[in-house]
Image 1 (spheres, rainbow, N blue to C red):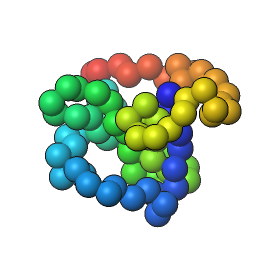
Image 2 (cartoon, rainbow, N blue to C red):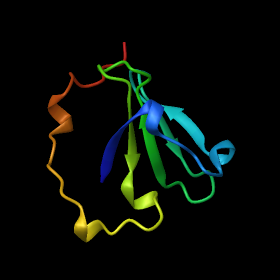
Image 3 (cartoon, rainbow, N blue to C red):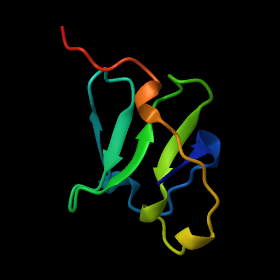
Image 4 (spheres, rainbow, N blue to C red):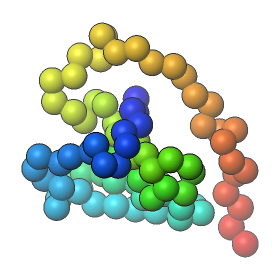
Amino acid sequence: MHVYVPREELEYLKGEDAIKGYYFGGKRAEHKFCPNCGSSFSVDPHGAFGPDLVSVNVRMLQDVDLEKLKFKTADGKSYEPPYNPE
């Protein structure tokens, strides 16, 4: 479950230097993850898809009650054509 945060409002309190990144497929968005457990932390498209937003995995944040969040589903599969390596 991800939330989209304006880049200027995203603040790392600690551990930012430990997060690792990886680019999949079309290499347009950096997927950041914990190098110890492999948990996905965020997706950073570097502004490639419109507003300068960063997608953050809510389950990785401390003191967030998932039951109290309001959310809407999204069909990510239809956002862009599938990756086709040449």
